[in-house]
Length: 502
Image 1: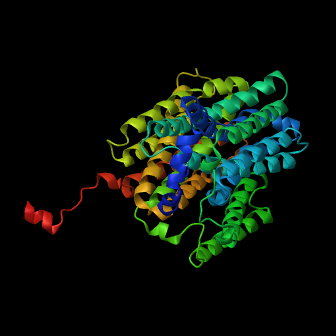
Image 2 (image 1 turned 90 degrees about the horizontal axis):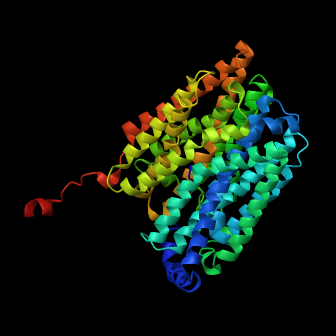
Image 3 (image 1 turned 90 degrees about the vertical axis):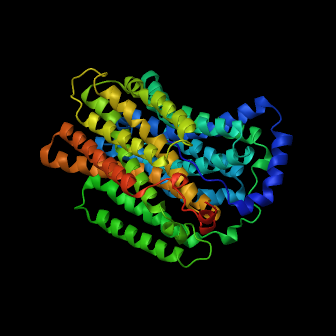
């Protein structure tokens, strides 16, 4: 599940390119420094996703500790994912102003502090708020980590390819590692120690980032300024997305009959409309309207959104299915989830080797197949069956989805947008994948809520959410088939001069 940000605009890179080369030559001194730099920055991805894994595999223990109902547990994951997805929209711009090194360290520190406080939560509301605030720190981490990798090494260098491959691999492994931390501490001591240990690790990486990243690689862009920051547009966009997602996730607890759920939904939609109108007017928009006119951009965003909504449902309901209907412990559920790490690694390496040889829409299609069949196989898994029959293939297949879809989408966008739009496009991709996962959990929770109310059948409710996830992935597949093409492999029409010479 990688989340990255495009390189800074070419106009800005040109002015600092010499400084970056000099900084690399003078301050990243040897192979050991390179290894430390690559690992510490790439590990940002691992512990970003680990924040979801901890919540997924300790949800029951936390619910007992803070006196929350089972239906409340969806917020334990969604709060972190949604705030991360919303605030990543502006995180890249913040990094441009204060420097990616400072922004990354603030992100690490923010996650550490609020994860620490999460362990002291006395009720569900306090825990959910802390999870949401930790998600804001998560939003600052990934785009700025990628900016540091992009600055450190020239395009096509072996170290750059190695670092980004490591970044991709750490995404699926992070979910399992986070689950192992949380479930392991819950098994040995208490769920609180899972969050406290996670906070200690994040604080340690904050310190290592300060020590390992050279100062000149982490400075802000020379022409970036807080005076140019789109404050009003950021407010409209962040508030609209948060209210829209909050209403869907809260509806699975109280139902749409509760007045404030649909009122907040309406207000959220109004804010998003205001965001669109404001962005077409302001001089320095968060998301330039011109991006949406580029061929292929909108289909990629929609395909990513539906695919990651499907994946968000899987992330929440697959571990819950194992722990609810097969009565396995959280630690055993982490072990059964482990094929995601191996298959995610294979998917990452395959893309690195084959992406220059095949049109990117084929990788996108394969990712949609992974989302589709991972969900449909889990939806049809009997409560009493050997793990190897359907659960293992489901975990193996769904692992293809996150890495392949993100890589494919990033390539299409990099070939579609102008240089000045690519950084904003990268932030939009980050927003879609994180926000889509959280929004999918909300949709799935609504389905579970109404099936439980009307039929009181938990197994049917879980299966229905996974069938819905299959439908979302199928919709993403259709968008890819009919609307997404890799411009790198399009045959160019010969010019009149070329035809005359021929």
